[in-house]
Amino acid sequence: MEKAQKKKQDKRFTIANREAFIGVGLALFNFIWWFAFAYGLGDRSPENYTYVFGLPAWFFYSCVLGFIVMILLVIFVVKVWFVEVPFDDEEGEQS
Figure 1 (cartoon, helix red, strand yellow):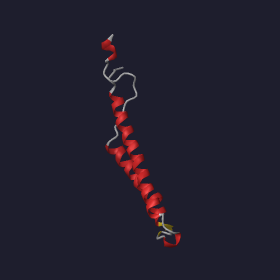
Figure 2 (figure 1 turned 90 degrees about the vertical axis):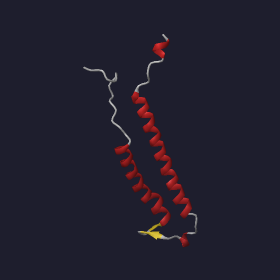
Figure 3 (figure 1 turned 45 degrees about the horizontal axis):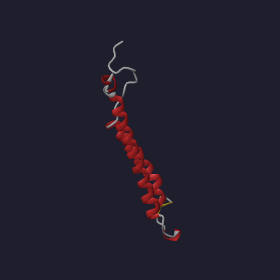
Figure 4 (figure 1 turned 180 degrees about the vertical axis):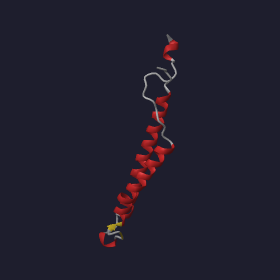
């Protein structure tokens, strides 16, 4: 009975956990990027703001550029580190 409990963990769970941690890391990076630019550049008086494409610099860098950077990071991560996982019940089972 103990051998049944020590059954090898499905490889798909290991892959899913790794990809979940990567996703959480991307979300944390996004928040830190946004927070740093929004509160780092946006804590001044509006009279002292600098502008990029007609938007306050803090908004442009935190929201517009941050969005573009995140899109590129997600595309890169999915193409490089994510792998396709079969959804079959038994791994390696032949029909």
